[in-house]
Length: 517
Image (cartoon, rainbow, N blue to C red):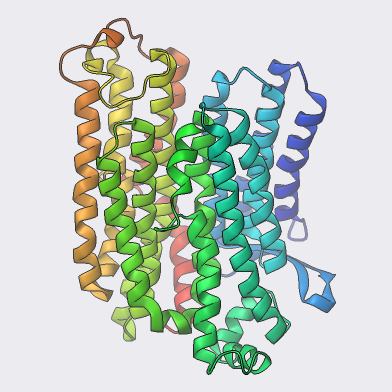
């Protein structure tokens, strides 16, 4: 089975399934839902089978497929997967499954919704496996199409404005990133990520690019900083990193609940993945020059987003800013590598930060998607209410729902024993050793996160019973099972993080060895 095109099939199955749903299932809602689940199941099987067939513990790229595409432009069809990529493929499957469970509330254009969901899943698979910039950028851009229509066709009254803002912000970032890689292409004729990383490691990348553009900037170092800023702008919009985050609160708030789950749980990880797969290996030299400024932006993202979440009265908007805050820790871990020390101890701290970064991506995807789903259930049962002060005493009417939501909230604030703790602990362990002042300045973000999440639980679940909560029904048996699955995953990963670390650790060692850590 080594010659089987696993990654190509993994991308084509949901893509073809999604297109088939949109073209041939109009008016057959029940069949459309069944077909969507069937395609999702096939995709999940491929991801799990891939994890058992290839040797992800080797740390190197596996299941590699490489074919000439446009050789004169340095474009190849080049895909592969390692521990980092496989963990994100698994996250995509998990979050997409949760979104399909939450999509039972979708009543209009059911076949289109499920088709777009599968198409978005396919573009995520393509992004997390592509190793050539053109191939990767193609999926990066294609993901905008299903995401745009998912936001625009379903959701709140301001969804049209939110979808346009989301599309334009992301497109502008993509244009900046494209310009940066065009500069590299014209200077080197190369667009494969492993080859660019090799040239950067040998110190040959930026002198070669500078010679082509000689006269525009004074030195290769200055040119590298300019290109790094362009590429980082494209990644930062998708993560998002402040101040390029302004599209996110409106988009997450106005989108339908399953769409928001997809955006925060899976699509936001595209930017962080690009940061680790492309930014760290290719831009290690300029990162060593600019890391204090980048750390400042990451700290701004962590602390300011937490404070913004504390100021919100809309629960969905609060969780949107919380998502920005949590992904800010990934930025801290990545940028701290620019200040990494040498020797074995430096490599240990870098490895902790890198492993924490990947765990944070996965754990945030799971907990954030679950919390948005809980808010969606609140909206569904209360006739559209989701304000912080709209509820009260809900624990008495719906103890099971409140218990499951409480576990997800405690996982998000990093309670030991739940999944959110492990990633943040590893990030701060590495950060305290590599950039102590950065770790100290990031601590207020942790404290404010605990404040607004605990306040949410206190206002919604405790206190006098509000009229809207008096006749509120608890979760049905099916809902308990569905919501209980991700909550159970939070316990499993909190108590047994090695389930993912066994795949991320070899990748981290491989990357650090390549970077010379």
